[in-house]
Image (cartoon, rainbow, N blue to C red; front, side, top):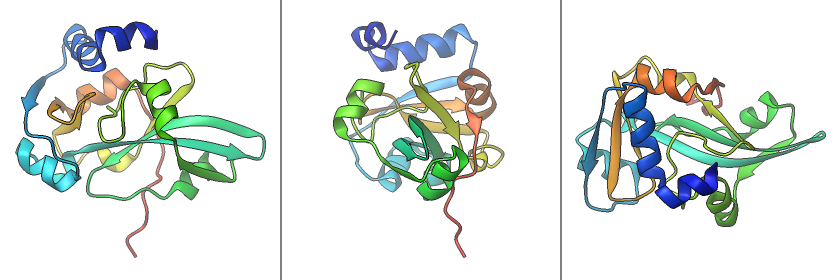
Length: 168
């Protein structure tokens, strides 16, 4: 399925899925920006509305899997919490090669959707309830999708896992 999506492109696959599922969303084209803060400013959204996707490799204790972990743009991940949730010893960010193979994207452009059967999708509960809309890059650094938070959750169906780093 991922090979088919890559040929049509991730952005098209996501927008088609959102349309088919009658999601409330819009596309924003903007200049390329690397940091979450800069992208939020270009989109006209709050930093916390950003759905930041981290592709991780979780292993140890007989566990070996890839997880796409999504959290608000104004928070940081605690990868040890993520590993513990899956009964593993450690979690690390995936390599650029793994990113390409599992998502068809490069770092910074990975959307909060999984189209690969071996890629588990999880979202921090903090992603929901703060804002009515979420924003994310969808396969490119110069184009974002802003979608109603409840529509994203309904369509993507991420497993909720609290892996956000404590601030105290």
